Amino acid sequence: MTTTPVTPDLPRCPWCLGSELYIRYHDEEWGVPEHDDQRLFAKLILDGAQAGLSWITILKKRDGYYRAFDGFDPVKMARYSDKKVEALMNDPGIVRNRLKIQAAVINASAYLELRESEGSFDAFLWQFVGGKPKRNAWTSMKDVPATSAESDAMSKALKKRGFKFVGSTICYAFMQAVGMINDHRVDCFRYQEL
Image (cartoon, rainbow, N blue to C red; front, side, top):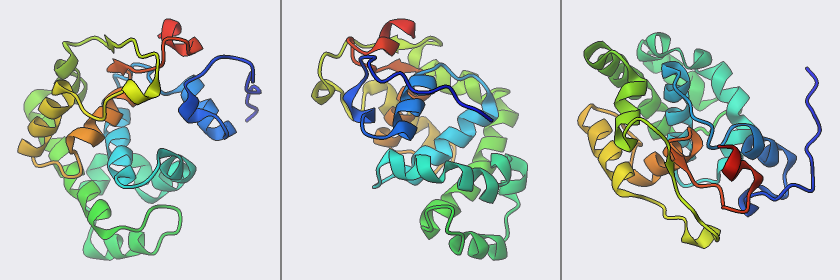
């Protein structure tokens, strides 16, 4: 697969500068509205794995996560045995944190139950922003909050449904990533595009 080269002179959010992988993620994925249930589930698991780490750490291991967690197939993940959890603990392609791995398994079951009762993970999650992206207008990254009333509500609702590693900060980062909140800086070329 060939990828188009990164255009270096475009104005971007400063957090992505310094790594081509980070720039490509910023330019192509971050803040793009996502509505596919399984991709939303995968992103929520990855954001939970990020807790206490930088996103670039998870981004570098993302392919390893997809391989290790069966493409984030929630049906398969919900059936993981203790033996599978131990195998994951020895997998260098992911962050080997027992609580995060166990949370991914728990979250797969919670996801399946939520989809059964609600019909759509997408609709359940997007309700916290009224079904459409919330557009902020930050001129400085220091102004971007770590949480919001929306992420607080999402976190509370997910925890009530049995999800783990879904605190408000994780939910806010998730909401930014999947386009529920446009937190690109106003001078970033992606701000107007999204």
